[in-house]
Length: 222
Length: 222
DNA sequence: CCGGGATTGTCAATCTGGCGACATTTCAGG
DNA sequence: CCTGAAATGTCGCCAGATTGACAATCCCGG
Image: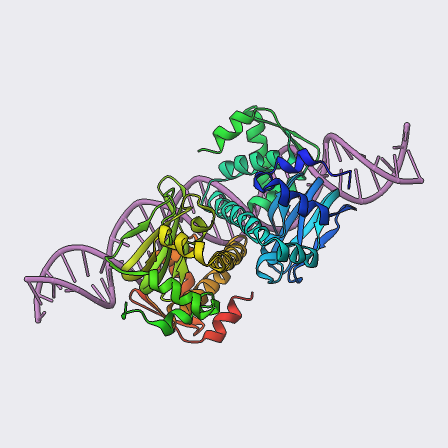
């Protein structure tokens, strides 16, 4: 357990707001898993298996709007907690959680969580607030994506990805970014190139570097 | 208070699952409001003002993706509860709630709810489950809308509207339905006509009648 | 250091949906 | 029953996105 970076976890706006004694309860029950690239932590329809957090690497939440189609619902970087919805309402998982690249994750099994929450019901309250935060993020995502011109969607998505990655380097194929904002790879490439010409980002191989974060925010307010 | 239709409210999958004694607590604090068409019950950014339910008519949740643009997030018919997100996390309203047509709504003020929940903390649990249900609905909506061909989105939306209306008659202008699935009125009209030719629906003036509910489901599974 | 698979850059052809315009139909109110 | 406002049905045109194709570039493993 000594490998858990407490400062990182507390930097998360949700976990950081959970009182320290309950944070300790959760962490005491958590196990660290190192997973290979592409590992599916859970899948659509699975029964609840507890709470997760990203320690290193990135985890994607992926939905399936239709057979053969994928939609990246959310991309999560270190410090982010997820999996609270099924933990709360005991319903099936609404999406896949897949490790993008090798990752280290924190896992609290559903039985362990229920045991904890049985003794400390405030934990239910805590993850309800996590659910609220994710609900707001979902709504914001819908607003971002629907009926917005592509450059704006792209700017907002990149800003979010950069924040999730905790830096200025976004390690994603253009194809993945295209899927996130719902356009073809070719169209995305054109938009990226246009943004690069404005000096806001630098397009590299399987990577986008944010050169001018303020410029990105400005483009996202169009 | 005698004008509250208990059978209607209990038919809601969330409220119906709340234990009867807590349902009674909530209803005892609720006031009935009759509002004119277009009344805004609350708006984006407002502080929390409690829980609501639709008794008669319809209420739309509307977001604003950009200046001048509207997005109907959710359309709610009689029996539906809403407003739990801000009630739970005390954050600002993420969208407007607007009465479509004259409506009767149930309202439990935020102070009243907090007083109730102070004495009966299980109420927090209850509305957390409501939040979960809405989160799942949001995710489903995202799957429906993003990267789905128009006929599929239309079929799913109509199926949902028919269910919300509690029958086979959907009383909406084509312009409103178009806004819900994010297309122009003209495009929607074309899709409606195509669906009518397949014998699944009947298009009337400011109204859609579902003729073949099974056929609608089939089209929504494309 | 070199070859092959993966990723990106770019083009032309095609298609889809948005938009403006306008005729037609329906409804409500005098 | 008549009239005007609201809603629907249908054009054609156009901007922009998709698709398929292919060359160029990059990275990794042997």
